[in-house]
Image 1 (cartoon, rainbow, N blue to C red):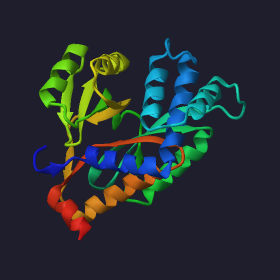
Image 2: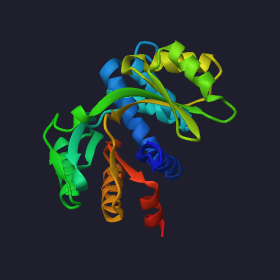
Image 3: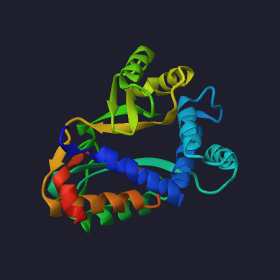
Length: 250
């Protein structure tokens, strides 16, 4: 949306901060464990696991951490089994949220999520009441330095992608979820520098937040949900006008 700062870009900046803090390793470990638990530990036979491992490698997660996460998912290390759950909710101004979590205690995660929403102007929604506002996509990020957008577009479409976008620093390639690993593999073979590949939820109709106070409340809610220990990913449908972000910085 021209003239506005996409929240997806803001989220990606925050993800890089997570890398510096080391939180991203914990999220990657959960993603790998869940993938291994669901489809086995053979990367060649488990597309989801392959994508999770590639994402972990892209953020420089140590090999031993990756191997330990796979063993955790296969139940070889003991302890409580990690379960995957997605919560839906609405924040201030009706902003939609989808939160993917990995937890060994569903009751705790549900109660904590409900508390975070209720204390910050939002509420947990019933399953399905928010998810329909999003499309499930495979997202591949390619380093933009020295790479023409038309070249990425042509290669991505030929590989089976649906769309290519540019956030200024990286090219975002979107593909059907079942084709994520194949498209990413084709792009790597073509010489492109794949920064990350993962499954995401993309809002069908982004909601523009133009009030500074509401923007502050929504961003705080996002931060709290994203910072929760069991959280893997937080997806939301809001965008913030440039002038509002500028006002928040003042």
